[in-house]
Image (cartoon, rainbow, N blue to C red; front, top):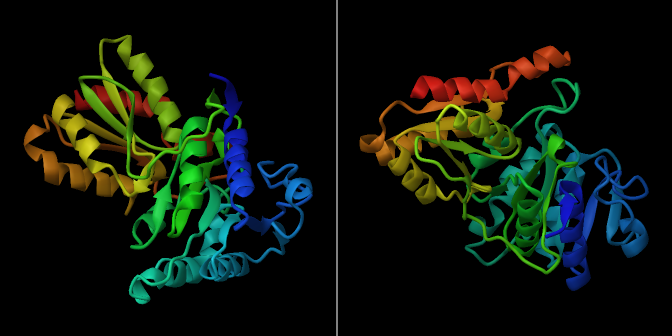
Length: 323
């Protein structure tokens, strides 16, 4: 199988869906001539023209509002909010409108909208460009939340998101864009709510997503040298969540570590810990361990930035303690 970068997998998904459905269009900041802040859209303005690659001013609430309006009239917009930090400027549109319209209409109106955004730490981009805010959207009924960790998952899940009839928050990690992985040339999609075991093991289940899958795999490889076998579960979609696969894994291993880059307070990690404890308490040989970011804004300084989020050694230490 050929290997391509995460950003290329995202671009391929967009091209395939735009070629097959003229209702799909792009809207966002610097997505035209500039090609997007991470160059995912490079060349698409020439390919599709300004009517389908709509470059906007710096106005996130307008981007979200325009995309919702277009979705209500039958289009399938892919709206980019350049960083998840800036979704704060569009929360009314996303939470009070996109997430609620289908319900408020008695199921008569759909909002087929994808909001692509980028989360997580970068290379010293500081507190206002480094947050992991997926828990905000995870908390809101009516939104689907997708966080792919590999190029294969990114392409398959984005194609599914564009075809979905409801609003999807599609969160990509800044550090994954240059990561390479196997992606088939033939068309495929990945259904929502279907987790994947990235590595099989018997001693500890590690639940992680997005960039933390990369670090968890590194930690598992190091732990294997010490005779500790880790099973790594990647949910791929946080909403809907494949809780059954995770619970089955915990029943097998008897131990669970939840790894998340987001700060631990009020987090997805906290909810996962509670849900697994509720459903598999009698199988747990030790309390669930959460390895998550500190409850602090992300510092600019690179050493402090690393200290504020989980690293490979943090996962290794958690595994040793839980055993």
